[in-house]
Image (cartoon, helix red, strand yellow):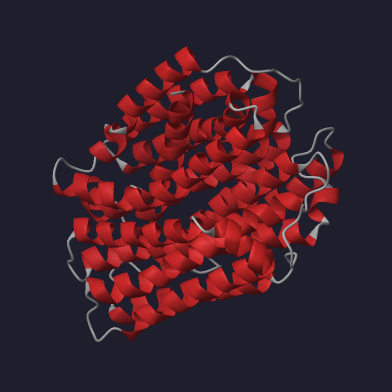
Length: 440
């Protein structure tokens, strides 16, 4: 039961990055939100989560995994309730940021709790397989659940459903999961704040980039992003316990692997965002049918991941990840072959190729990044990879939403797919830096 509760928390973290996608058109009409507002509903969650993940690992050690997990569940539940009762755009965006704060507490703490619950290596390996499989399930189930809620009880239940799940998970965690060890670690709060400024300002500049660089808000955001990046570098060099170390960043597999993960999530989250808006708003397709197609995309990836161990031993991380990214890119470009107005078949069949690519890419990338990290810095490498992927998702929704436009036509949809495919192929180039053989 302890593993179920911990996995439920992780499930919610991933679920809430995608469940809102098919609710966006309805939510936008109810809250009178423009396209940029819808982009922020998605990106505010992933940007805040990316910025906080880098410091959350140290917070897990300092405050204890169970305590931080429980606090994260409470914050996440209250923030979800805030989203469910929101009356305007500012309320729902601020509640989404609060959700990310809770999620940042749950994500690293849930992984640490799996290790504490299963000290035996063999049992821990099986438990981590279940824990990791939750991510793929949540990515696929999210859009389908969102579509079902929109069609039946309304978009507010997209967020309200989190509250009882958090309550049950908190009770089971309190009852079944013992308190873990507490290790004093310094928290790099200045580094986290500088990262948040950089990520948030860059995302704002992309979302409002249609105004032009001479626009005062856009120019201010660009300057803030540059200042935030400079601050991150300066703070990390001076910090007693930095979020990132020079030794870690000098490992090509860690740095370029994290960038490849960013490219993958850019394409995945951006594709879900674009398909949700275009297929509902322009093609007037049923949201539940769209959600079911996206579920099957995720299922294809999960099916491939069942054989990841054997595939990784035979091909190695470099070939696995490169092939996966190329498959995903080709799948997206195949969506361009539809005649005029795309039916779900023209999205579903290439989507299976995208899903297979994701299954080939995700686990081998994680193995390569963690396996090549310096001794004692695997936690930092994991935080960097997860943060990079979350920020990539935020940029995907921001960039591709801007390419699609507020009143998208078929040509705008094609342009968005070209950019998505390009992100996957760029990620494939970065995967060339990964080791040929699986690190030991």
